[in-house]
Image (cartoon, rainbow, N blue to C red; front, side, top):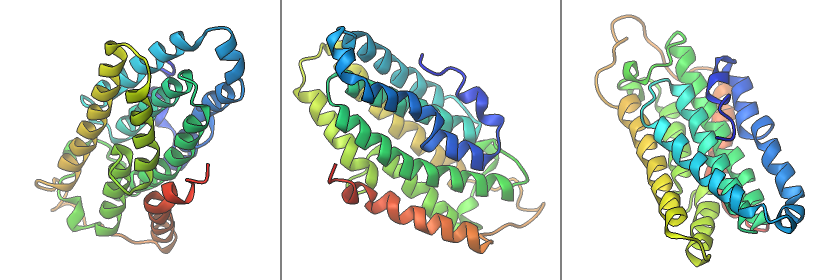
Length: 243
């Protein structure tokens, strides 16, 4: 509902997509709304934002569960997290929305870097149905990919847990109707669903390119970047808790 162009823009190179989706372009609108949040409350715009955010979160999560393009799945997950930020902002928790914006940038950048490494090694293949058993050839990338996916789900003590747990707690304590409450927790379940789907298709089963060519975790700069982002994807939420 907010950014229907977002999944269609995934034809861009993976490094550009990582920069755009994690911390710059798509989050600029959320940051602008955070800066103008007192004005939004004055004009009683919160109910409209809450409904738009919840519907965006739900529809993007639902679409990601039926998509097979790896980069489009990550793009739809970004759209779902934008809906989460907008909805919690509409309830009056602007600093919590900003906290989740920062934490989301940490693990989403790692997720895109791992996806880019996989796509590059698979000769530009993006269909997750042809990525079976990639963990046997790229263990470092697979570990980083799964840690960032778990952080996206809000796994306890990873970076995403610190913001998502607070958001769900504030939703439980807020006076919202049952429809919004149901959409919130259903969308959270959809996030876990498409993350497990990525794990199932990408990390298990038979590799369709096993007889064609071999690939592995190579490249000092890529490995160093993934390990650095892995650290912040694990500990970033606790380090940013001063917000």
